[in-house]
Length: 212
Image (cartoon, rainbow, N blue to C red; front, side, top):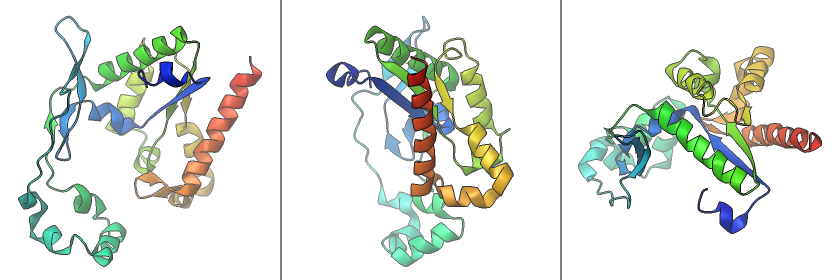
């Protein structure tokens, strides 16, 4: 985003993230894949690490015999998706490498940094927070505690945030968990879910415009 802002100079930047993104800042390798990450240096400044990203060298042994044998089967893929084993089917046994646990602080500083860039270039910023089903149904989970800690951080508390938790929870309270079933496909939004979030975002942007 920092590199693209001066190229395209949008009127508004919508910066989306999910609770899991906070924990993902902890890793240099996630689900077997190398990734860039930020960490706090000795003087407390953000430091970009693992850049350029080393090539990932997966090993077929990590798949195990079952996925090696049935990995190309659409039928087995469908069965895994509908029997609660899809995360293992996609991610099981792929290693991750933890480098720190400063996800809230790193995330807060990154949000503050993009806010500074937007203000310098007269671009409106909207921080869009989205959730998956387990976050809506378990508001006291560790992921949700991280989100609350981030939103209460001094560097973030004044940022323009569109938090979709309250309307999603209201839907669940009014229509039950079946409402969420229509809005999600596994952990990700379904087309109906994306349409619903887009409607919330459109309303939010319209309200900002009306305020001048």
